[in-house]
Image 1 (cartoon, one colour):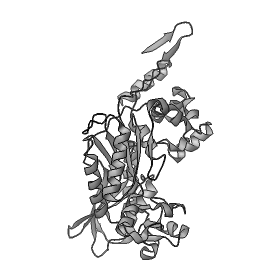
Image 2 (image 1 turned 30 degrees about the horizontal axis):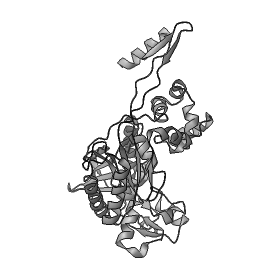
Image 3 (image 1 turned 180 degrees about the horizontal axis):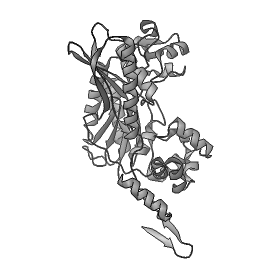
Image 4 (image 1 turned 90 degrees about the vertical axis):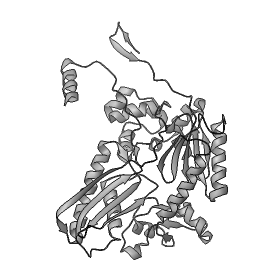
Length: 391
């Protein structure tokens, strides 16, 4: 409800209310692909393991899927070029990704989740939201369920995970990243505001590098700084993202845990009138496709962790190859480099009839769309907005 101060002609809005009735867990496996490889080969324990083909085998091309925590101490991270990872850590142990194995372990992980709840929203092979408000073991404590899941995963899969427990998805996801690896962080409603105040603005999901620069220019360095900005100020500076952040820093996120086992995807493919016959033609086509896919992702306010390359040769044989990362694909160039590294494992013995790039394991960059608030505008401004809405 909005109230109007008649004396000053100012529109005032009630502060949005939090829904604190739910119990949400976010489970995030610790360095998942690297940890699976270490489990399979215990001699790799406590060594810098990098999930990527060695750059000596690829001519310096390729990207890192993930790295063990020992390798991360050298500054190595997901989606970094394997050449850069080698420069940072020449003694690193490079292992090609085995996604068939990772998918099987992920299936086993989800079987554990289903002992406790059927309300599960997978984000990728290694992380998921669980709504345990009403659960299959009639346990009132979300914390105890999270502890049980951590125990089961370690006991049965010999892997570790981190967990965040709170009353909504946004805070639960922040919490799972707070004490990695092997951590569990519980943020009850009465602790949420202090937790959000303490976070650097870089930790807020959906705030990318460019937004961080802009926020720092506005003297927003922490959750508390963000809280002290009005909704109108944030909307004027960041558009719809400003609405979302205004609510999130107040601990408000009403998005539900969605049971969706089929991965949503955004992609683009091209069938060529004349088959591509040179590497340069393929590279140029991959660059164009990467640009179009990333533009569509931005338009739909999505980002993803899995890249699928589809190839159809002139004899109509069709192949799909995929790479999954533990971090979201950030921009067009990164998507192109990933698609190119997948292509370089193929041969050019036949002409290429079709190429396609798809990004899956999607999640919203901005977690919800919130209607614009009404504030006083001139008649011209209102007419302009109405016209734009119709078009």
